[in-house]
View 1 (cartoon, rainbow, N blue to C red):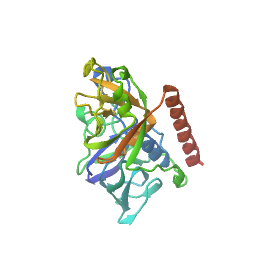
View 2: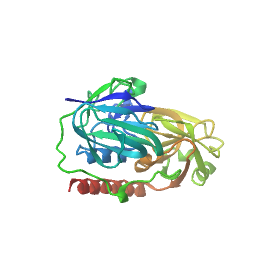
View 3: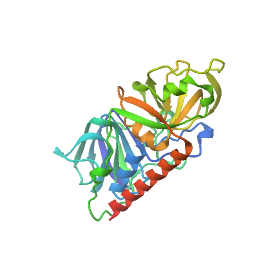
View 4: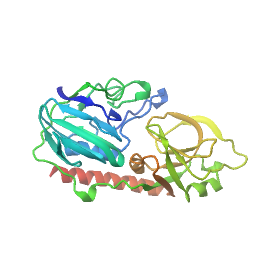
Length: 315
């Protein structure tokens, strides 16, 4: 282990995340992990890490970090101004840093979350097979919490990076203020009729109640069939589920839920959750209905896309 950096200012909400903690939801422990899995994996690729190495997830306002050793870093995801020793540097590429170098990551200008990878990955204890932070349970990550001033984090053993890496512009996603999420109806779509038409034909606004548990949206009411109850017996909740509580306003679940008793009218496909993770309050969300076969095809296409990026960056 190598002392990697010291936190001079922590940013708005900065946590250690990897790709998640799986297999413990039956115990009430959520998956956690990076909300934008694409940006997280690409940040790791840019510094030569495996895609599941631990990174910093940075929300809205970035931290100020003093590096304590020589290494390579990369920032991917939301567009945030960034300087290294007061000199502008760009995201989506590897950056060499040395001892005493200071990195400033500024306020977001497009998107919501960015991911800072460091060569060798961030070294924090594995908890149930993951280094992800679950702040609600005070577990994982760095002391089970978001970063604070004067925290010192370590990195794993350095992984050789022979040449600088940069992601071509064609692969860099845009983060528009209006997004469309593809979703499979169900599992309780039989509780709705007009409500399904409403969901798939309306625009909804992201409210201020948007975090790692889920995004609460505001727009036309989604009505249930008259004879259907507003809630169900609690059942497992998965990221992407679109819950409709008693106020008839949809909530898209993210990675820090385990069970829920609201009806779920649809399920957002997993590749599109990365896009929603970059939405901020005031952005507009629409839904497009797709069948399960289409969802599987899109998932495979995303895997092929990541594989191609891996090969391009490794050349």
